[in-house]
Structures are given as structure tokens and as C-alpha cells.
Image (spheres, rainbow, N blue to C red):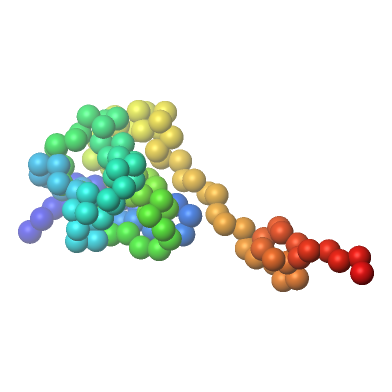
Length: 130
């Protein structure tokens, strides 16, 4: 039986990530794939690792993440948010460093909805005088 040390839920745009922290050697698995395989873009993989680097926990825990919804940028942000929350559960002393870097703040920016009678959220159709 594997024991979860911390559980965190992260959200960004329309993505939701459930993060489970367990004792281990620093392996990160997202939706059954390795981190580098799931996020081939280096910047997204780096974004997921940021909370571990700030708290100096790179090789202390195994991390299991289930993420769904949105695109790769939103999913990476959701993973970072969830991982930060889970690290706070594991050790409360991580809170100040994660808070000061802004990893515990839920980024509430969402895509504005498209309105009827318009080409997009704010863009109008071209005006024709005649």
C-alpha cells in the first residue's frame, strides 16, 4: 500500500490537476507518462518542477499527477499550482517560499466568452455604411 504524504488540487484556465506526493526518488508521472514525455516542450516541464526547486525537494518525493482539460500551458500551470499546495501539506515551512514566488495563487484569468452578433468576445463584424 502506497501512502500519499500530500494531496493538492491545482487549477489554471480550464485545466484541473490532482497531485499526489509520495516517498521516493524524484520521479514525476503525469497521466501515466514521464514528465519529459508528457510535456516535450522544456518550458512546460520546467514550470512543473519550479515548486520543487524553490523548496529544495527535487529528489525527495515521487509525484503522481492526473490532469485534464485545457491546453498544455494551462495544464502545466495547473500542475504547478497543485504541486505547490501538496508541498504545503507535507511541510508547512514551504509555505512562505511558495507564496513569495506566487505559486500558491490561483491564476483566475479565463477566456472571455464569445457574444452573439460579434465575431469574437470583443471583435465586431465589419461596419458597412452602404
